[in-house]
Length: 387
Image (cartoon, rainbow, N blue to C red):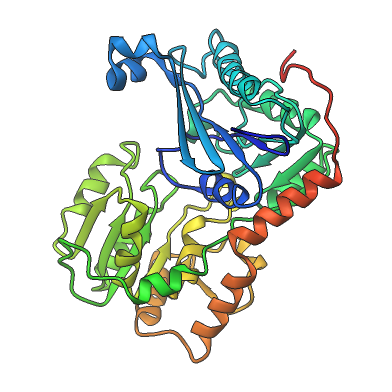
């Protein structure tokens, strides 16, 4: 049952895809209110690949992930970002959500849209939460920039509450007349304890000092920084799926090095073991408009885990207390900073990073989101998210 006072969540990725901001925040929100999570419709060709023809007889899957969180997965049209199909894809997502809500009675009080793609209304205060500067990332997302800009304008116009992942994104929105609240990524302060008691990961073969990267290995990363770290004599541990678009030949050469180990995508429960194996965590982002409007989740996970951090300079790092993260912009400086950090954090850093993690938990972020939605309470007008 999804009773009154619930939250409908339209994420940017499916529940079983990479665990990111959407899933972590929605899980924490579900500790306070029931959550109905609506996966983006699965393109028909992918649905057939995983479910087979018989899967078309049951085009909607409802799974209870916890007593207060239910996910919905439904089949959608192929190529959902094309002009001819995105409206149908959006309609499918809304239809699945409304069908689930009809079975459970009263309408929700909060509706979170964390994707630039329009989503039909289901009721409640609409919150638009941009977990990235989607417009700046059009090329990376493989979506026509003009279409993405139009989607964003519609989302900003329809939302009662606008949440931006970073100050840079909030400033861009303000230039178009849209006020917003900055809601950065959070972290799990309990990760520190799990890392301290974690066992050595099975198959781990690197000798120290070990520099690590957690998360998707995508074109957002600057391979020159990772190559410099490996050239400096540090072992390199890479934890996460590899995007084929990440300079294939160059990435393959890096992964082939003797002191580099790529373990692919790992279940969340294994992450503490890999973090425990790291002497320093890296955030080697390119200097792009898309990246500079972000606050990488991996950076905060390293802090929560008690792993010293070296990152490329990003504006959102100004949100952190001075000295928690070391920044370096060139390959040589980045490698030097990584080697220094791997030798051990300065005095007082473990205590300061843990205190920061406790103040910036996912629970605190959930409190902020719900408080902002409640302040604009009442049911927003029901209308389509496109015209």
